[in-house]
Length: 158
Image 1 (tube, helix red, strand yellow):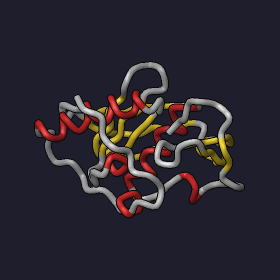
Image 2: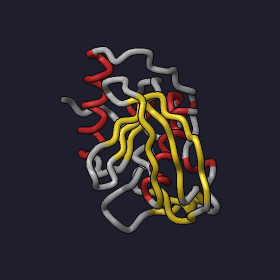
Image 3: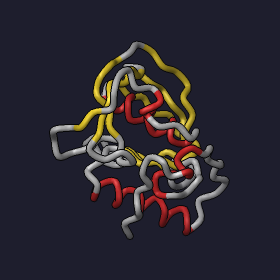
């Protein structure tokens, strides 16, 4: 697979809504593999199609339990809340306080276009919400509850 260029905040592609994926073609499989490699290379926990310049509804997430591929994801249920620093590979070296649900349940399709449901709490819930926002053309900075600040550690989350 190949590394893709991560688009940075201010790039117009990050403010556009993504289109559904109707079938997993070899090009889409390549995109998924490239996104996983790019996410790992950048030390992120998630990456969405528009972050690599592709306006398709696909995200990859890995909170340390192996990669999750979500095609055409939809939130089904959320509950509770968590507030904490959130970063993004499209705004490297920065973070801001954001409140997200503590629990989410979503449905999506995997790389074989098989529908599945996923539940997540804590970091996984935050990552799912963050990445799905990207598919709608939104960045976490729109939800920030204070100023965006520099991060003091080497790894970014997305």
